[in-house]
Length: 509
Ligand SMILES: Cc1cc2nc3c(=O)[nH]c(=O)nc-3n(C[C@H](O)[C@H](O)[C@H](O)COP(=O)(O)OP(=O)(O)OC[C@H]3O[C@@H](n4cnc5c(N)ncnc54)[C@H](O)[C@@H]3O)c2cc1C
Picture 1 (cartoon, rainbow, N blue to C red):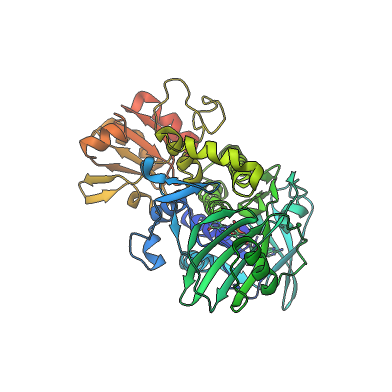
Picture 2 (spheres, rainbow, N blue to C red):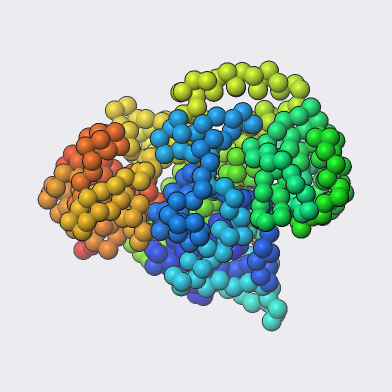
């Protein structure tokens, strides 16, 4: 065995996963076919929930702007703008952070934790036996020749055209690209910012300053035929499309980078087959509406990492791993739905005008703003942590379920014997947290068999947070990914069963 887990792809998903696996004590090798990172950035930010995920691991200061990144309260759904802060904790995300920077932050973190990140290593083949055997073996092309590597699990984080997905024979059903859209990092131009996009009769455009002297532009002309991956796009073509939509001539400028993308929408039929798992774009592709792709990949990784680490280190059984597909496939399905819906409104041209108007009217209602902000910020995600007690559609409430159950626990200030802390700081180590808010010794003692897997913390929250956030719960069990697995008023409220379900059998069992 060369490692417990081989991660294919050193994009944001693979690097986040590598860090999470190391926090959980798994040996990990990351393989990427590129000799070095490209430095290019499709994404320029991440959603509120992805930002919280980084905060849960103490990574935000590494983005160079202190604890608080610049966030945009106003966002959009399909180009219809509204204030996301209608929902507590929501915003349109951290913006102006090039994907290359996110990757560099995650690569440094994963490497510090001991991940073995190897560039210039292309996965070419997957040996039979991964479906029902006890390992996965890949053939890897390197500058020194072809190598074989074996691990207990292989995770394809190798992007939308995923080789791993194809080699594992996992279907990728969905809809074909219907149009081409362009991006360019343009120089030598003084462009009017159109941060959230502008819909005009001939298409949609966006523009935002990227760095000194460089603007990112997105150009989505109506009627631009979809193109295959091996086709090229030139700055002249992009400038022409820009002029067609805006009437502005930008041909005097230049471009540092020009590329194109599409509205192809697909999702892997299975996120796991035998010893192979998929995460990030390898598992789902969609229109980049609202900047959700990288953010979803990072959350896939945060969901999978601790579970896979617990399985390969023998702390938990395979049934824990099964919850990865159950939880994240559903999230992916909703992601595809929301980005397709946004595409219809944003890019639908004149025929979509009535839809835009109705949506604009609807966003006048607080309940609509809260709902849509939850969808795009990913703060609405609710896992069904109660063994099917919810209805399966984004973990809707089981009758009488505590409102926190399955949801992420937001950042709440806490006071404990160790001083001031908060709910995110408690998750830095990537272990589960049993938060004892009522000073209940029986609760703390019930978790003794999970020492080293679950940190037991006695703390108090403000009266306001105890009511509004914790809704009267005396104790809360938080998974390493920040989602609430159990709430109760005492140890005999099913705490032992919840600990065993999410963290394996207690020591000595
Ligand atoms: C215009 C545009 C704007 C976007 N803006 C945002 C945004 O603001 N916010 C956001 O969250 N998302 C955004 N996205 C989406 C985001 O860019 C992707 O979702 C993200 O890159 C997915 O990350 P990943 O790690 O899953 O895959 P990738 O970033 O595609 O990484 C895959 C890696 O796998 C490697 N690889 C591939 N095949 C092999 C192989 N056979 N062997 C070894 N290595 C291999 C590749 O070299 C690559 O490094 C945007 C996308 C586009 C097109």
